[in-house]
Image 1 (cartoon, rainbow, N blue to C red):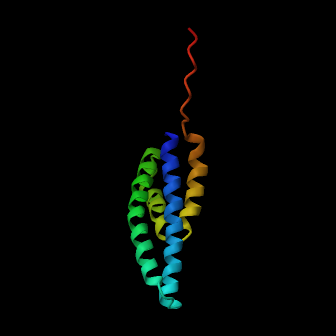
Image 2: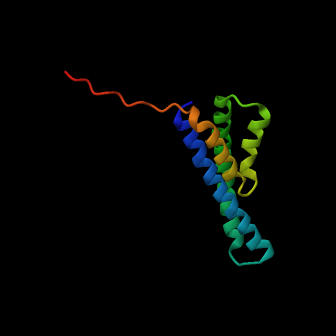
Length: 113
């Protein structure tokens, strides 16, 4: 597996996780604390999280299929972006498992003429 597959999954896991935490805080501010402007914030962050979660799903599916994981494990990784903070823990575990299996591109040696 190429290192870029793992890297793009990791980036999207963090982005999705941060946006989900921000969305959760926005919902608390909107409904529990009744803070002005929280509705606009929640709408914007919810929209961003929704679209970027789709990108996360694509990258996570690609990673899982290249790692040849079973459906149950794949579902666990895909759903991590729906539970606040879960994406961070799942990303850490996935990275720890797959990092040794990543093939790093070697730089070509210069040709002496």
